[in-house]
Image 1 (cartoon, rainbow, N blue to C red):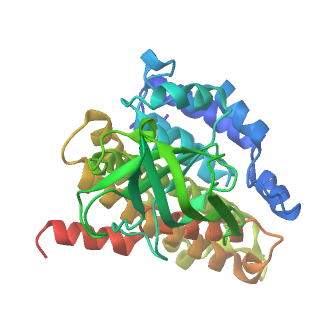
Image 2: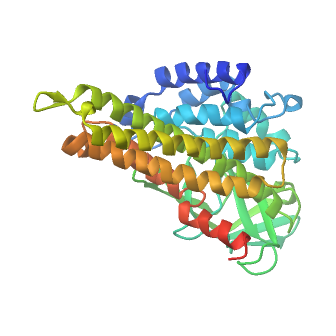
Length: 375
C-alpha cells in the first residue's frame, strides 16, 4: 500500500487498477486505432466508468456525486495513463466538473456526467501552443450572445455533448479580465468541427464558431468574470494531466524493467548490466519526485489553498519531464524493436507527448513560475 494514500484511497486505487486493466488495456486502444474508430473512445466503456462511480468523484454529494477530491481523481487518471485507455474522463469528470461546480449550469449537466451519457470538451486554445490569450468574440445579441472565432486542440470536440468555451466579452486577447465561459450544447447552429488524428491516434477537433447563438443561461459564472472559472478548469485539468502522465511514465517503466529481466544479450540478461541498472534507478527516482509534486498540487487544490496555482505548474512541468524520460529510456532500452508497432512501448511515447502539450508543456509552466517570481 502506498504510504501517501489512506485506506479509502487505496481501495479506490485497487478498484480502478482492476477495472481499467481489464476493461481498457493497451490492446483496447490499439483496436480503436486499427479500426480507424471515428469517435476516439468507447461510449459503452464511458458508461461503465459511470457505473463504477468514477464520473462522480469530483461532483459534490449534494449533487449526487461522491464528493471526493483531486487526489482520488488522480488515482483513476494514473490507471488510465498506465493502460493508455482512451477516455473523456480528464476533460469531462475532472476539468469540466471543476468549471461547472457551484454554478447554475451544474443542474443541467451533472446528471448526464454522473450517468455516463454526457461527454464534455474544452474549447480553450486558439493557437498552435497553449497560452493565456483568448480572442474569440462573444457579442451581446438579444437575450444572449453570439460566439465568433475558432478553437484548436479540442479533445473529443467532434462528439462532445457539451462544449465549455472561453470567449472574450471585453478587452483585448491578452487581458486577464473580460473573459466569459459558456456552456454550448453540441447541436448549436453555426458550429462546425474538423477532427484530426493526433500522434497517439486520439482525435482532437478544430472548432469554428460562425456566430453561434447562446442564451444568457449558457454563461458559466459571471459575464467578464470567467477567468476564475477558467483557472479552476485549468488547475484541475493540468493536475489531472500530470497524474495521467505519471501513469504513462510508470507503465513505460514497468514494461522496460520487465524487458530488462527477460532479454538476453550474448547469453546474459541485459538487466544485469550495471549501466542499465543505473538508468532504471535514475528513472524511478525522477518519477517519484514528480509523484510528490503532483500529490502536493492535488492536496492544495482540495484544500483550496492559495498556493495551489504555483504547485499545479510545478506538477505539470515535473510530470512532463519525468514521463518524457520514462518513454525515451523505455524505447532506447528496448533497442530497435522499441521503434516497431509490434511493441507497445512506442504508444507510451506518443501518449506522453500529447499529454505534455495539453494545458501547457514544461517550458510554458517553467516560464509561468519564473514570471510569477519576478524574472
